[in-house]
Length: 95
Image (cartoon, rainbow, N blue to C red; front, top):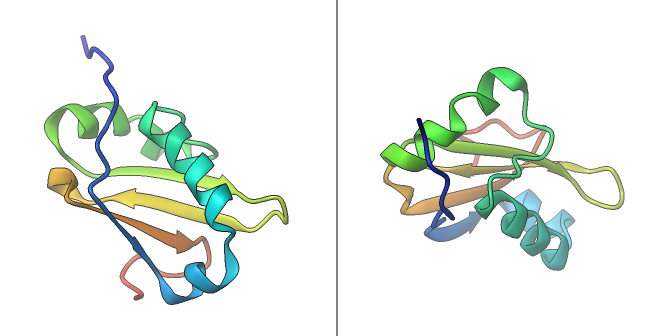
């Protein structure tokens, strides 16, 4: 059984487009949800792996929408040193 605890997200890294498009306060609100296991609209097949990623230091992923319906990912890398903020239409390896 997994016992939940808040997750550290490490250093935030915004893609260039996310930095240009998203409102920082809305991203902060999403990060607060994310840190408390609210993964937003992430697909079920990803959602199922998130709790174990938190416990084991693996990858954790959330998907959110801003007030303009712009989707964005919050993706914490394994070891939880970095968390990336990207628009949903950007590839995960895009800077």
